[in-house]
Length: 104
Picture 1 (cartoon, rainbow, N blue to C red):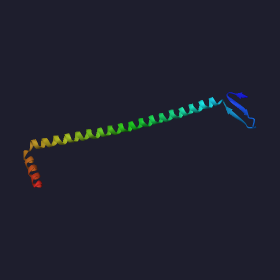
Picture 2 (cartoon, rainbow, N blue to C red; picture 1 turned 90 degrees about the vertical axis):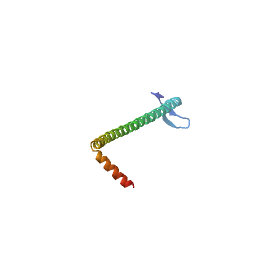
Picture 3 (spheres, rainbow, N blue to C red; picture 1 turned 60 degrees about the vertical axis):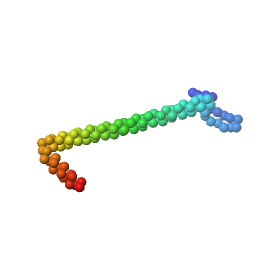
Picture 4 (tube, rainbow, N blue to C red; picture 1 turned 90 degrees about the horizontal axis):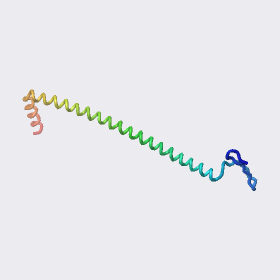
């Protein structure tokens, strides 16, 4: 007796039970379930890799910001020193003398 794929089984040994479909159907269900699990694992791996790439990009952006601000700061310091040295050549002589006295 079968209702929508379910079969009532009675064996010669007296075992009674319900079974869904034939062996072929069960094998196909197992294969499809396995493929579904594999697809889920691949989707999860792709999701994790995408999140990792996003984190790396955020880190790179923050490093770029830091280097840009460091470049701007060194530019300002260089400009300040050059204007200081240009205006007062005596300061340059004093700094040179001080540096040579520390080296000796």
